[in-house]
Length: 404
Ligand code: PLP
Image 1 (cartoon, rainbow, N blue to C red):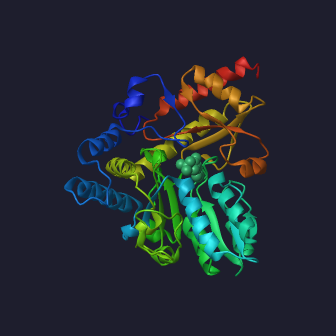
Image 2 (cartoon, rainbow, N blue to C red):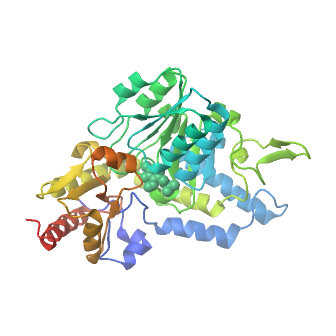
Image 3 (cartoon, rainbow, N blue to C red):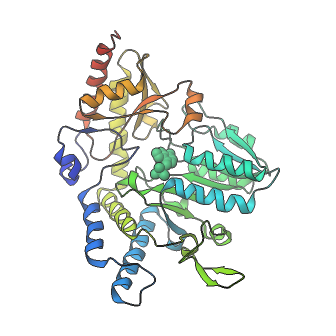
């Protein structure tokens, strides 16, 4: 199975032909189209948007608005004013937990997250629950690492105000049923917040049909730049949301005693925006759309299936999470008692990049009964040779550690 896109589209991969990059769940490599779009913005249309009375500033404003439109189309959002540009998933989730939580949570209310959340969708909710005197409940996981929806349905009550959960686990690649969880939340009048950091890069989101109240994602995991992300929300909730940060751009009128807020999306985008970031994300969305997001999903699933078979057949290897056919392009595993960091270092000697550690998911590590795993993750530029190179390198590492 060859890669879905030519390696030559990616400058870093082109100049490092021997590099086997298997860490796209941490961050994806950038196609030239994204780098060129950002550069072109800086070279042709760069100025501070929204404020200038001159044509160049108007062009920068126009580029920012066009980027929002393109990203909204990619995420399946008709009302593009409901797409807020942020610094990334962490920023998006802190925005909603902080702004909504502070305004809406009180003593006796309940916040539910799953046991498989990245710290970015765990800690902000835990902290706002502590601050507001709300109960913080962790929904159990099914054996395959997905949220146990039956347990969740039994857990919720009228006290439940929010359910925060991932679209896809960054450790296990397990894919949650977003509409099902959103519907459980709706049945008790709770808000549903989906962490799409590992969903949006790999499968169609279709926000308007998803049923969830909020969806967060990071540009850098979907071929776009670091420092940019989105929070997409339902207008009714966004309209009632108090600002997350205050300052320039997000105001309507500043009086000596009080201030009124700008309309969406500006109310939630204080300060000079990251226009180049938005332009880069829009170019990444266009690139993924040109390949076809469904083709991206099938390519990764085929590769991960191959990797699952190759790696799990090696003696002493334990692959965590769902069956080969049920996962997004992520494979977490341990090899006997070889520490994942040692394994990753040995693989690095062969120019294979994998991640090792708790993957910012310590609550999940506890539930898996491990302190760390090794993780290989696949994307559009990976092919079956990468899978074979990984398998052979694990076998060689076992010999180095005298693991028969
Ligand atoms: N949520 C998940 C599932 C992730 O995998 C990550 C990053 O690895 C994040 C949230 C945080 O994303 P960022 O660091 O881009 O804000």
